[in-house]
Amino acid sequence: MQRVRSLKTGWQLLKTSCEGAAKLVVTSPSTSRNYSHLPPQGSGSFGLLFDIDGVLVRGRTPIPGAKQVFRNLVDSNGKYKVPVVFVTNAGNCMRQTKAEHLSEMLDVEVSPDQVMLSHSPLRMFTQFHKMRVLVSGQGPVEEVAHNLGFQDVITIDMLREAYPLLDVVDHDRRPKGSIPPTKGLRPIDAVILFGEPIRWETNLQLIVDVLLTNGNPENTWSSQQYPHIPVLACNMDLLWMAEAKNPRFGHGMFLVCLESLYKKITGNELKYEALIGKPSVVTYNYAELLIRQQAETLGWNTPVKRLYAIGDNPMADIYGANLYNRYLQASRRTKAQMQATSGGGGVDPLAETVDAQKMTSSELGGASSVFGAEEDLPEGCSSMLVCTGVYSRDQQELPSDTTHTVTEQQIFHGHRDFRFDPVLLQPSFVVQDVKEAVELVFQQEGWPLE
Image 1 (spheres, rainbow, N blue to C red):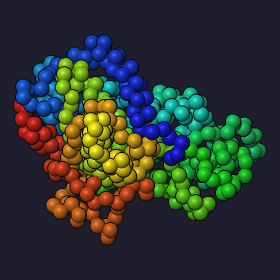
Image 2 (spheres, rainbow, N blue to C red):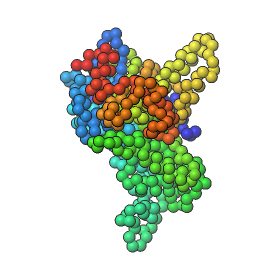
Image 3 (tube, rainbow, N blue to C red):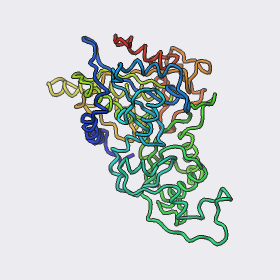
Image 4 (cartoon, helix red, strand yellow):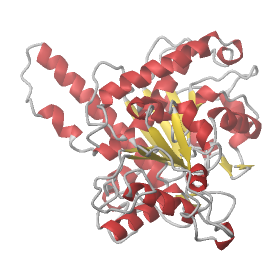
C-alpha cells in the first residue's frame, strides 16, 4: 500500500477527471434536460445511491415496484427530482452499456454519468496507467482498461496464447501435436482484477505464474520474489443475487481462491495495492462527486447534505455506507479542529489522527488516511437494507443491539483485509424493498414523492 498516493492527492485527480466529464454533461442537451428541480423551500438537499443487483433487478428481471419507484423519481418530462447514482460492484461492461440496460429495465432515461461501476475509481490511479498491466475478468476487459486510462494492456487470453504450455487443466485446450513456440512478451508490471472470470482455473494459474516470476511467466517460479508486483482488485463481493433462490459466487470468492493458492505455494500473504468497489471509502467518495455534479446541474445552490445508500448486501452495501459515514464524521471533526487551530483554539495535535487510525488503507480503497478539510462534504450517509437480495428477513434477523448484529460465531463474509466490526453491519433502516426505501427517504426529508 505504501506506493499509493494519499487520499487528498487522489481526490484532486478524481475531481479533475470528473469535472472534465461534468462540463460535457452540462453542455449536452440530452443529459442536462434530465435535471430541473430545486429542493422544496426550507428543506435540505439529498442524493440517492442505488445498488442494482438484488435491489432493482434479479438477473434480467426487474424487482416488483422498481419501475414505479423511478416513475416517481422523475417528472412527466422524465427529469429527475433529486440526484441519483447507481453504485454497483459489477465491472464486466462499459458505463454506457450498463446505463442503456438500466434505462430499458426501469423505463426511465439513465445516463452513463449516473452509473458507477466497481472499477470506476481506477481513473485516479494514474501512476499505473503507463505500466504494462495484466487484466482479469470477463466482457470487454481490454476496452474497459483503455477507457480507464491504461495504455499497455495484456489480457489472460493474450497471455495464454503467448505461452501455450501454461494452461493445461482442460485437456481439450492443450496443444496438439508439436509444441507451438512461445512468443515471449515484455514483463508485466501490475495485475488488475476486474471481476470473476469465466475459466477460474486458467486465470488462477496464469495470475500465480505472473506473480511468482516477477511478471515474466517464461521464467522459473521463485517464492523469494516478495513482495510481488502490484495487484489491484475491484469488487470484493463474496456473494451476489441473480434469479436463483440462493446467492451466487462473486468476485470476492475468486479473490479468496487466489489468496489461498498464493499463500499455500509461497507461505506469504497476497498483497493488494488497492481494493476498489464497495465497501471501500474511495468508491463512495467517487459516487458523492457524481451526486454533487448532478446537484449543480439541477441548479441547486446549496451542498448536498445527506446521502442515502440503498442495498441488499450487508457486507458490501451496509458496511460500505456506514464506513463512508464514519469517514464523513471524521472529516468534519478534522475540519473543525483545523478551524479551531487557525482561530487560536487549543487542539490536541494527535486528535486529528485518532479517527484516521480507525480505518485501514484497504478500507480507504488503497489510499492513505488523509482527511481533506477543504471539500464541502455531506453531513452523513444513511444505509438502507432491502430484503429482496442477499439479505432476507426469513434467513437472518438483525438484532436492534448493534453489538449483536454479527458475532464471531457467525460467518464473516467481508474481505480478508477488512476488519470485523459489527457496528458497521448495522443498517440505519431495514425495509422490505426499494419502493419502501425511497418512500421512507422522501418522508424523512419532507419532500413530496409524487
